Length: 464
Image (cartoon, rainbow, N blue to C red; front, side):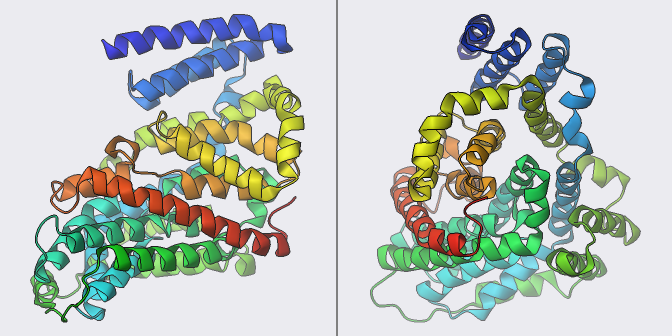
């Protein structure tokens, strides 16, 4: 019944929008394109059919109704961002299937003393070190949550105790915090990069992106660590044994040949990405070579390449990224900027207010638009031209969206939190406790953003 209602509602809103918008200065083709997008958004929110199927239907309608050329609608499939995303999924599959991520995580946690404070720091460190290797945060949460529970049980914490909840939150925050730091840490990074104008993409190499986000990451990590230890740590605690971690490593045995090969490929790829400004080999070329190397060293074969890459995501992202070209061709971007320009310019007089407003809008919108990827792909189509018109670097606006796009007030909002929650059958934390800490996390994100804005301004990042 719900799907039937939203199916009809989406179609109705799309038709009404297409009929009314020409009265406000849009051409019939442009109004039809916005009507098609409104219909698609409603269907995406309600999950009437799979996201990528709705996107495919949208592409057909844009060609047939809005008279756009297929080269325009499918333009994103020829961009470097799409190819980066494809190879990122393959790298993720290789690291997961080889067992390398699990081994790295166990070794890192073994380095830290066996008390709550240091294991909290260990969880944050594991998330940071493993961040560039797997672009699926949900996959990392699925693997890391059982590890967090094993650490908690080895330290004698019972299910649902405050220390148990704290280690779970440290695991989630450890996965989430570094995501904006590395383009390769999440599919969201590649999606955001794809919306940037070419000159902005050229400026923000892997290395510069990393350096720009680093101050925010340090602040957010330190403040979250302090809050988790203060809110969930025991007052007096002895150092516990780490025998459970040692036993898991013993069971894994020595590194296999596949793990060693995968580690070598990752290290070379990361080095090439970070030094792009020196050798000038584009990141997507390095990533494609890494994909080829995984096949050469038998880390991936034809069947695993077919099954491990999220082809539905790639189709969905490619079509939605193409909306930017479609809207530019139809003049929708210029219309929107003219419509909102004066109000945005007033906000843009204070970049603090402008970016915090974007962050607040993102948090509120995510109660309705369940998919963070869907939200980014819809919102960035409009945000980039508005930011440019206001004289604000669209990268600063985009990264602000990234900072705030993953609240977990409710399970349905956050696939990463949900993956970790169900990976341990909800044994470590309840939904209410998670929602309570989400308020703290959002506040920390906002305060950290305010703190780094002067640095961005001094570094020439804040304005165009």
